Image (cartoon, rainbow, N blue to C red; front, side, top):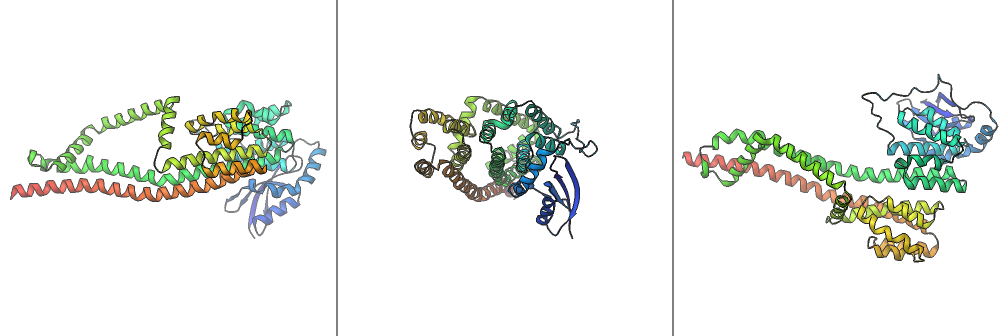
Length: 441
């Protein structure tokens, strides 16, 4: 029978490590919950980890008994020092570069599991600190715990870390605290972060292969011009102007790459640095985002991607009681395209003056007819949050399928372009060789 190694939280907040034999993961989870434990991590014998963030709702079945035991317990909640995992220091070759997006996602998911299991917030943070092995995340959790112990709410504790969590996260937590539904809000936050991660990773994964093709194409052309073409230069040097002009161009390019390649590399690096510095300015970012929207195939996809981010954030905020004006401001800030974000500035003031959201969004000229109709329908039926989330789902699917279609066209174009460049180099060299043979005859 398979064996699983687990880490689970007891009712008093202590962490317990052990092993259990079960026919499946679900059976192992049932055994642990039957013992009054809240599973945090479950690893199979082969080392495959089970993400328990998705099991948050299932763990809620044991929340009532765990909460009763936790509230009546007077035992210390910090695990013994011998049982606490050792934290890895941030040495010279440490990979710890501070908390990242995935750290926030994991923290949110695990904290939601703890709260739904009935553990108080401070004990949940202590459990997370004992589980953590990343120094920067541990320092973040300790700072949050210190603020919570001082009487602050979680949203207030997150305020000094605004650069990491952002307005969206902090306002969601504040709404959960106000309504007494912090565990449910954190669960929704974890789901939202997971969807955003999947969308972002889907787009990034889709462009990896074309990027590899471009790199291979550049390297192939440089090798051909820098190492292959110069081998024929001695054969062609006595022909002068009798050499066909395509061969002269290729030989000149090969000579340039072989003799001045280092200067070309420095020039390219310099241009890249100058462009990057320009794009860091407000005007440069605005110019870049405007050009991105004008691209023939990718422009509409970028627009839909930004609408997806706005609609998902807006729907999630409205569903948790955030006011519509505040939600629009926060959701607009989640849009990465500065041109589109600037166009949304006029929406909140228009709604303050009594205008409908659909009309205010229509004046921006950014939203598709489908998006405007769904917003209008949501306002009429009183289900604006649900319609915005549905709009995000629809546009999410359209973005994914659109990226796949664009890459289906892009990949053969890149392959053909690479083949055409290499073929042009080879044909030019062959033309030169044939010219030498004609002169010899």
